[in-house]
Length: 193
Image (cartoon, rainbow, N blue to C red; front, side):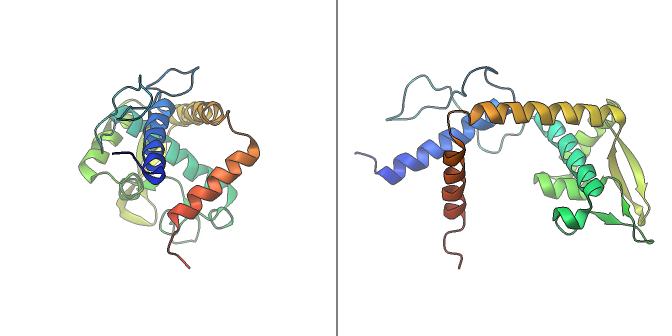
């Protein structure tokens, strides 16, 4: 049975997303366009994809580092001015914004279970990338903060990601990128008035 245009578009979006995710996280060649998974009716030579929901521990730990760095950067810019979502910044009793994020906040941001997050934080702490500090606004809570080593690694990860994104979208002109963004945004907000 012949696939409809909508089915073809849907599967190409899925394949692109999976392939792009692998490419951005270093699982594909660094100098070539990403390879995408195959399916009936699609170009041959695409490698199989990972099962849905699989998360690499190394990639998750790297994501934690970049989230902590983004949080620091937003604090530097001013959380309100940057539009940082409520509940992520930690305000102390005297009104200042404290450094770091609570483990619960990281867990919610990454949508993983607390025990897995605790394991990831433990590895990062033993490797010298993060440290745990008492939250000045709530002595019962612990804040996860970057060490200098962790901050340096997070900067490297952000630079690598920017380079890969630039390469990934290099076939598109600036106008095409804007149009693709507009169309994807429109699809995600269908039914909203």
